[in-house]
Each structure stands twice: as C-alpha cells, then as structure tokens.
Length: 329
Image (cartoon, rainbow, N blue to C red; front, side, top):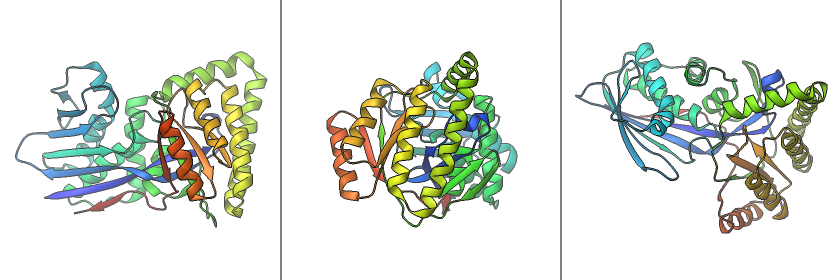
C-alpha cells in the first residue's frame, strides 16, 4: 500500500513574537509545501529518506523505530534536523499502529526557514501514517498531534504553525482559537530566504530577555504589534492591499526594534520595497529565515524575485493557499 500527503508551508503576515505574549497573529498557508510518500514495507520500523537543503550531506537515509529512536545517523547536526520526523513517527505509531514503512520526505524550503517546515513535515508524516493504517484522521485531531510533536521537540509551541499547515487559508490565530479570514483580494507574495537558519527557541528567548530588560517599553511594543495585527485583519477582509503593505512595514520596524532582524533580512526587505512591494517584513522568529513582501501585481512580484535571485537570495512568488493537508493514494 502507498499513500501520499501534501502539506502547505506558511508565512506569518503579522504578529510573530507578540503571539507569545497573548496577542493574536495572522498567518497564511502558501503554495510552497512538503510532500510525504509512505509505502508499506516488509522491514522493521520506518526507513526515512529526505533531502536536507543547504550545505551538508544532501540526501539522508535513517531508520526510526516505533518509539522514535534514530539509527544510522552519527552526526549530531543530522539528528537535530530529524528530531521532528522521529517524534512524529513515535506519536503516529502510538496513535495509529501503522505497519512498517519506507517514508520519503521532500520539502520546498530549507529547515529552520521560518516557514513552518517542522510543523508541515510533522503533519505530513502523521497524516501518511494514519492513512497507511486505514484510520480516518480529522483536521482538528491532526492539528493537536502536530502541536504535540512541536512541544515534544521544542518544549514550548504556539498554535500558529500547527493550525495553519493543517487547515490552510488565511487565519487569525489566538491561542488555540482561530478563525478564517475571508479576503476579497489575495495578495501576491514574494518569500525570500536570507541564507541563514532561524532558530525559534533562541529568538523567543532573546526577545524575552530584551522585554525583561526594558520593562514597560518592551510590553508596549508587544501591545502595538497587537494593534497592527488588528489593522492587518481589517485590511485583508476589506481587500485594502495598500494599507496592508503599510502595516507590514510598521510591523517590520517593531520586529527590528526587538532585535530579530539581521543584515541579510534588512537587505531583502529593502530590496523588496525598492522593487515595488506594497510592504515587506521578517516572517517568523527572525535571526535568519525569510522575509515576505506583498505585491498587487504578479509581474512586479516576478521581477522582484528575479532581482533577489541575482543578489544571491532564493526567492519564490506565491499566494495564500486555501487548502491544508491533502492525502491521496
């Protein structure tokens, strides 16, 4: 038996870091994604094959037992990148009792890019194992299992990534609650990778220390980001892309003040604005990862992506995707 899962990646349009302090965030599933192929096998456990982007070994093969133990992986760096896969297999084996399988994972973005790759990989593996077991898996249960994997690996996790990759669409997420935003005009998005990984836990801790050091000022920054999120929600629901862009610029300035931007991210953001973006900002935890620019016109977005490629950055033109996890086979 063979099954396939397709899971979208995501961008945070507004609200990262403030979400940790109880404010909502607006996120969107995008056209880039993760593909997982699982084939029942006669072996023991789960044979994982995946491509790790960037410098390093490229294609990786590892074996994961039903309890999540990794074998055939000697490098600590590789073990770090495969933690979410191993945890998803452990959770999936416990929940669904799937047969042994060979699992192939392909991702259209590097790990730690700020696009929810860990959540998407986890969702794809869990959905594929459930399908291989013949079990019906509703989206809400999947969302909760993805977050369980994130908590297992990270210790802390918001609901933003697990919710967005599972359900798709443009969402306002506040704690575990969320609502879908109806957008009469979908923006064209350019997502550009800075070339450096974004480590969510490290950046959240850095921001926490800064907020503690500056006291009321840091808390006020979070409050203002929350106000920006409310404005972003209204702009999207009213189809006001110009106002959306201006608010994204404001949001980026606040994130830069929190110390989560970098020289590369600033270069990408300013290149996007110079190429005609209505607004641009860091997306995700920062310290690396990606920036996103909002465009009204697809041709301008394509030109901006080409410019960024010439500057040495990987860039993709995409749009919000209404679809979450999909299973076939």
